[in-house]
Image (cartoon, rainbow, N blue to C red; front, side, top):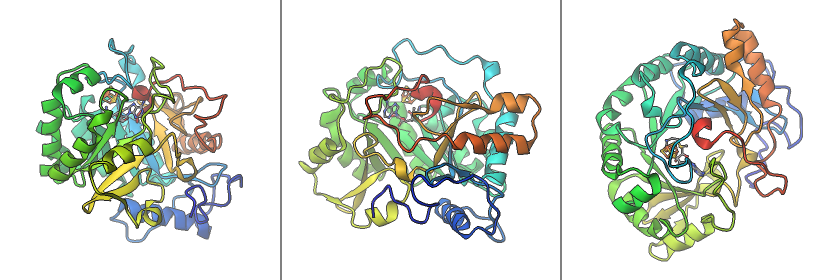
Length: 381
Ligand code: SAM
Ligand code: SF4
């Protein structure tokens, strides 16, 4: 089945959904229940639908919320941030834990969010992260809690984060060579990241997924080594095509290392085969799955084979802006609504409305494509 056709997920492309339904609507009930089952949502006597869902006008329903906890970072990956960093958000613009929890409660209880992924910037830099995770774990229904991190400082904290309720982790690592790591991230921290990965495995945050972005002439030759290391270490490696999200505007389609190139580079050294169950199982998961001696390897072709038709994501920035797409050019200011004294119902209304402008695709290949003003580090990857 084509990844862009989703007969179960709310109608044909272009069919308008209002974002509002009663729990008797079988089709949306099923989408919600499937999403709960995929996310492993537990603890409910029976699966009940929220009053409404975050539906867009193209038949997609967002159940996976990516929350940026901070725009700050302790690395300076060249595809993400300039060497000098960026002007950080003033503290009073960032949502407090109480404010964030209120929005998350509305998302989970009233709008069908089943997974919350904490990201940034670097989420481990958020003060009180452990307490925040513990409080998210108390939400009802209990969402799956995931985090994407660069792994620095994780070695000392993986255990307590898992105990607080963190379910899954993605750690970013683009190279195994200390000098290349320093060139790429402008910091000499490779041992910290490797220690963080070991700690995540020891804490049982499995499967530990490792995200790798390959840059031409910098680390693209390392693809087979990264695969061998992932198999040895017991992590699931996922290569991600570089996207135009850096404030330096250094991305170019011609220089980008494509998913096909990555596959060829790996296959030149390892017995890489397509996972036969991939298409049936993938659903909204972005990675194309392969196997090397039975071990799963993912390739995320965000640019060359976009999966926008199956997107189930919505984003909340650390300053409380809803973004219905990574590449959205407009945002909906939930922080102003919240700080203005709005009710939960008004917050939910605004969030539902924000989904209705979600475009069918990111449009990177469209001649009118414009990179969003917010850099990746302030959106939350
Ligand atoms: N600091 C954390 C980290 O690096 O994992 C979380 C935030 S980071 C923005 C999330 C993910 O986005 C990382 O895996 C990173 O490699 C990826 N990323 C950043 N900029 C990217 C770009 N221009 N294209 C593709 N992936 C990118
Ligand atoms: Fe920081 Fe993550 Fe961006 Fe690297 S990719 S600079 S670790 S936010």
